[in-house]
Length: 323
Image 1 (cartoon, rainbow, N blue to C red):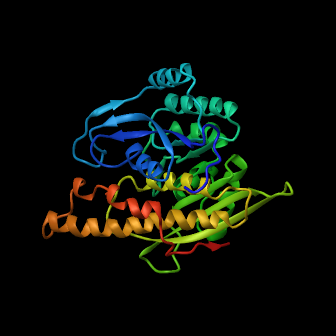
Image 2: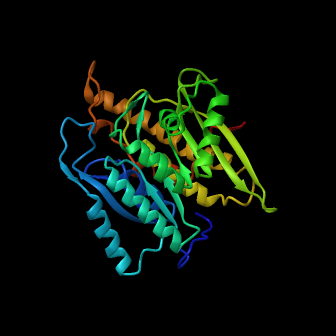
């Protein structure tokens, strides 16, 4: 990144609390490399350590408890190195662990009021939850109010606000409700609304409350359509949240009202170019799988290292529309 405005030693440091896999790219494995490529120091706490993601037939590993999370954080704090500019969180299945994350974020914000918390509120998709039901009130009442940036999909946004999205107007109203809960930046990463560019695209929305130089606040909202890839890839949401963190830092919030558009353009550019690379992966995965057979999860793993150039300098190929 060209400019750093971070708290200590001219470095930007991220505390990323997410899952970890030995093989493949998901959670911290999907987020850390892109952030490091873009100049961030990343301190990772692995909420789980699995052999691979759970889309495989088998996986083994360990789950970090809330007490173990507290012990790790206490070790950092005792050495007086608990100074962070960003916190990034993703998937978890345990309420006490999630509540401990909130406690850590609040303590870090007291130490650095400028800290930005980026939260992917992972609850479910397409009408069903894939975490325990009791995580919903924790996210709604404790996590979202302390988050600065959130990246729900449509189902998660509806769940958090209690309002369904069936039109673009509904999406705007849901983003406004989420703003009222706390976050200044909301990105609905995917929706079921009909794309204007055809069925091969997916509609996303973004909204940001911006503090203007005269002290007033303005809200800018955008819509962008993202090409679909006909396969299930794991870790792309973690990559998106990391890119949103990086490009939010690159476009400071008090400079111009257009910055949410610029941020999302850059994020989507990375995902799109990654999607083009995913299409190549899919092509070769199909060849490896053989005629009439679906590629295996290992054949569909992200190729993060090979995407380094796109992460560093994404070309804008889709423009967000300001609503």
